[in-house]
Length: 316
Image (cartoon, rainbow, N blue to C red; front, side, top):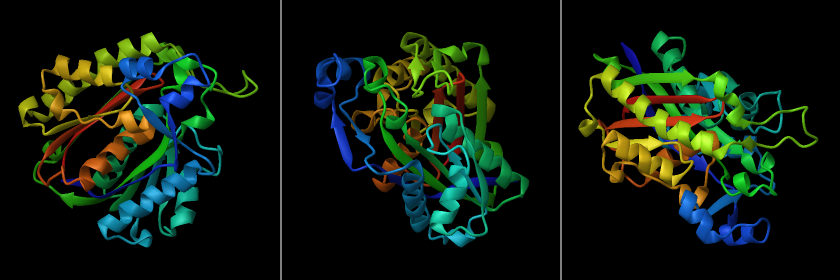
């Protein structure tokens, strides 16, 4: 049975860094308050960069590491909820920018769960035989859609993009190599919204407590679901790569799953919550730092607006 392998990773970040100290001049907050409640120290904010330019840079780096030319890519999926245009979609703009003349693609909007849902979608296309190679990208310009006067949200988010290059290969046990899960709870969608047509400048509105409680409950649940479905023990998983929203959420998930925190890598202190980009940015850092080895088992899990939560257990 066919499954996927990640053959290359890449990321792109805006040059400007905004520290918590700078935010103290904009809203009623403090560096200590932000660090204590979120673990965030700084974030990258776009000045001239767009979702397309960030996504394209990350894609080029992933292709370079994979040893692939853009013309060899069959499919491009971009997870984003902050693109500057509704259409043409970001995927088509990336296709144009990198010269992937034989690829087709589209965007997925599931906010912070988006990259993992896009990865699961690409895996399905590859497993079906419809495509052989793919680029999956998470790219966000969250600074465009946050209210910089709302201390409850502006402190949380950053901009950036991450990408993975995929290829299909044959496996005797595809479930052991890639197990996907996803859920939605539309009845809880009001906890995290961005509504066009209701405000002159649409911005994120969030019930922080509701989202926090949801994430702390649902992330451990989906991890347990994947372990059970794949018949893999938690001890056999090398890393749990979670959406980088809040250090306390990740620590709570580790405690509930019963796994040491060292298996839950974090980089949100440097980048804050980059929504759909957070997981691939972290994957790229781990890969390029030599932490990821062939044969390792890794769980990815994300949660976000919708409300949605998704995951996959994969073999590197």
